[in-house]
Amino acid sequence: MLPEYSGGSIASMSVEKFSVSFEGGLAAMVRKAAAEEKLSVSSWLAEAAEAKARQRHLRHALDAFAAEHGALRDAEIEELVRSARASSRMTGPPRNRPRKSARGKRSRKVA
Image (cartoon, rainbow, N blue to C red; front, side, top):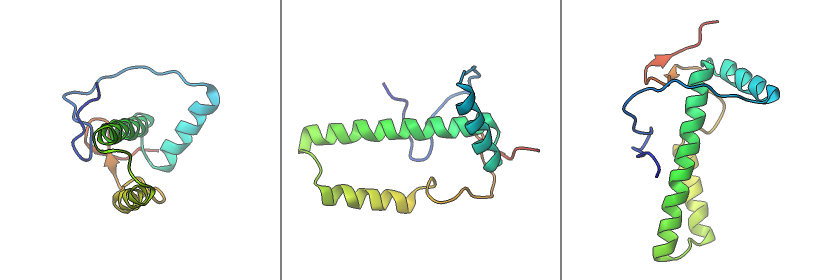
């Protein structure tokens, strides 16, 4: 079961701290990406996890729609992609403004 998606963030009741392990090359890429966006590694990973959860939620919704109404046509898919890209905060270069941290507060990484 997926967490509830509330149109901008995954609904959560609390922050949970846990440990993750990465292969060295991936860890370096994550650190670099977080630094470029002026985020902590934790905040960057939280945003990446949220994006992945949104993708899963969308996939499940599209599968349910297709089961009930039939598969979307190519033109419908193209229009949905255009619309999503136009309204997405994930498109384009990283912005130089504070982003929400994993705890929902605005934060910038201090160098």
